[in-house]
Image 1: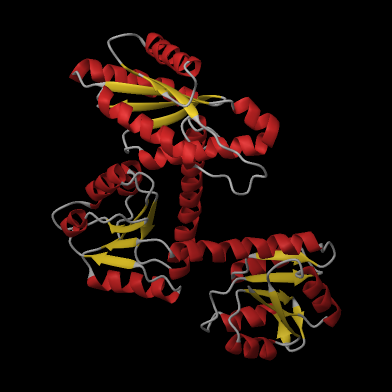
Image 2: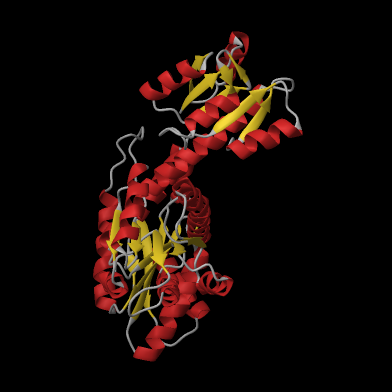
Length: 422
């Protein structure tokens, strides 16, 4: 971020430069209006800090001159020791965005202002990465919107004059700019349709209609915002940034929700499903087998002599063994098979629509491949095996189904381990 600081006090220029050291901002300093415009002409400036009294005029002179140039959209903050309500009223009417008092100046206050404008830049960067659709039957309106967005480096835009063309495209956009008066379909119905299919998208209605009932209807139909034509370019960008901030927050909440939902059903060590998810999944598969008469097979696994692994090689090695088993089974199974951690060194593999003979083939393949896994980074010779109890659902309850597999697993252990008892 580039900051222009115009102030006749070189002492305060040093204070500002020192105050911005903890930010990513670069400060260009000068004492006169003419020098300020020379810097503006050569360097892209994002924020202007200007003292009230300058070497060749006042802050008001600078702002009035700036308003007639291509630099008009750059925000200005007044830095003054004469901070009173009359001055504030004068300068706010000229378009400044805020005041910083030299009398009560603090580095924290300056950083807060800079951070705010850095966030604005980040919002623009976010909008640049977004997919945008403009729907308007006026070629002129589309051209105006495109020129405003392109001016801010926003290029990822599709334009539509026909609402049916947008609906048929089946494309998904993050931001929709929609005219209210359209051929064939009203803007209101377009808003309803888009909101139904894209609940988190930003929808901004742009219309020449100023009637409050129309505005209320558009917002109640699902629009995030409503802008009246003709509109100010800076006002449009401010509204887009404001809505994009909410859009980002919604996306963040959705992401956190998805993460929490995943954590609730995932074993934190191995990344496979946990006991809670296993029980719910088996219940669903039992109900599905009951309805359709499909076979349902279950393998209960217990790693042999796992306590010895932990005692002789350490718990870190024990964790590696558990992860290796999880990786192996996930690689060998079908997408509709579910593998989860039952507890400790016990695991369950659910195989829907799988006969006993096919389930037994897969179970023995897993057992043999697991035995072959090497642990080159572990000191000492380590060979690990597992035993399994394999059974098919035959109309029993979840508890009875699990007990049946557990009994078979126990017999496999009793028979010498490293085997599948079916």
